[in-house]
Image 1 (tube, one colour):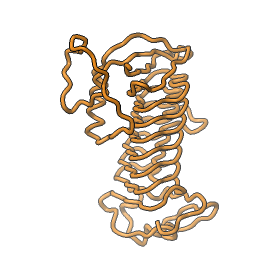
Image 2 (cartoon, rainbow, N blue to C red):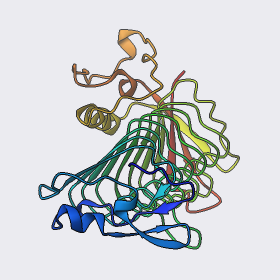
Image 3 (cartoon, one colour):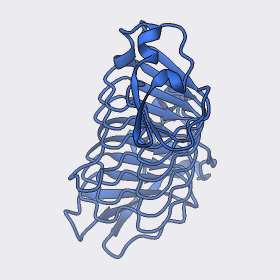
Image 4 (tube, rainbow, N blue to C red):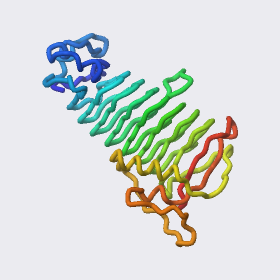
Length: 289
């Protein structure tokens, strides 16, 4: 970016599947919406190189740039800097990696692909747009830092992982899918959840169960170890990390953790079932303190 916008810049054209077949001068002529005026992409960005390999890098102060990677289906989009709202909205494939912070509506209603944020995210990550019946329907969102309110609102399928803290209403109205939080949580976690799992991996997450949830026991889960190894393979580094609680050897499960299994997923978790105001087939797993 060579000209930082003073009002929002909507640049849906910045997506690997839209730019891979274009020459440099054609990319610079792509239309963007600057406030209420239509401008060309080259008015704000210096364009160089080729996107024939399906990889696009965007650099600069992008906090007012919206809709990057929206509806993308393939390729790789790498962003160096803070980026605005609706990143990866309704994407169906490919990958987005951000070395910075992201605004609201990250990966809203996405259906496939992977988004990896090496920073913080705003509100409504992986959520449903107002009036929609379901939010994220597939894919993976990894946020190594903190996130705002209503993470995974209306989640239908997929995985959302937050390495830091989240705001209120995490997992509200979840239909299915998995949300994993490594930091502290706000109020009303899992409110209105029908199915799905919310995993609270921090032993002092601050979780307060709603009256419509019932605690069903303390257990160890094999699938959390699978999740932990997969996150390690993706290079996910949570902002909040705590050592696993020490337990006597007699209380340990017969399963032996390998060197590739992170310690957070080898402990025991309290299981809360709910929301009994809805279908009540969801679960909140809270790491033993």
